[in-house]
Image (cartoon, rainbow, N blue to C red; front, side):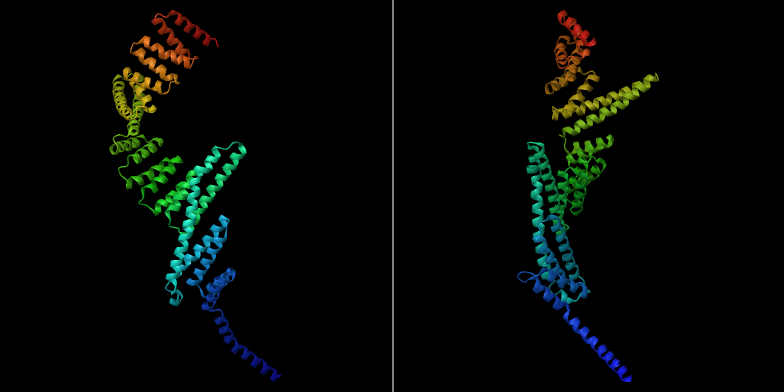
Length: 461
């Protein structure tokens, strides 16, 4: 029995003595140098044994912790996977993983806790990685830009020229696929070089072309954060919000443009337009005045200010009626005076706008109406003649022209515009009623009778 116990004791001691030696031998086999050397051989073999190299690098990182060379090889391995992959989504995944390992390389090279001898080739690794990243960035960015350029030139043209519903659906599907591809290429470029503002701007343009203005604004804002000193970046975001009818955010971003370009009349006008849509007319007026200061020949600013005073005049018109209902003559007179001052201001700005843009329909219409209200029928007549020349199919222009001639007591001349209005809309009883009076005044009884008969016919319908 004692002999048996001695045997067990010897066996235990032998085993105990053997364990450190076995551990040392195991450690020697899996040293980082040997593993990396094997990984290097596998990676650059002909053909490369990529999976073997990947496994060896994984062993280095799991056994020894962060190691620049292991990260470098792993990044290269996923770069190789990306170069072989034709599926764009899978390619993006590989590039994402590649970038993660290259970023880990940069971090480990700057980590003071990592052994210096492990970092001896860091400068060379980083130089090569920068070159690889530049290659993938350029390839993906150029592909994205090319597809983006074709969205309107090719794909939208194919949709517009489709000969039947089937070909149109196919063209729409092709354009949707192109939008996705362009966006993915831009995202791929961002994965490789994340601080590339051009790619964020490109993504904004992709979504803008696809009428996804919420998304385009997000990417334009990201691009602007990277280039806060570039006005066009902020302007892109502002226009995206305008497209989405988000007027308040558009104002915010246009004001960022103003900070960079203080005297840009177009930006002032855009802010004014946003405030008009927000029904904040006083702020719109202020920015229109700033626009005129920056550009005294801005017709749109003059016309917008004319509309501002016209809106103000309506407020005083309501007050006139209020005081008249109260039989307060002085209150009514005071508000009539204020209203007329507003009309005069409005007329001045509309007139200046028309001097710069003679065929602006908005300005012509409002200036004509104000001129009639203020009893300036010669001015109003000139406006409505111009409107009838531009839009001869609109009976309202001919009626307004005729009304001005009647007010000027040029009754014979008023016949022609009212006849034209009746020709455009033969069912308008009011026009025929005016024609009866005008024909009678001119001694044209036959025409007056025909006009009465027309009225009777219409009333009996």
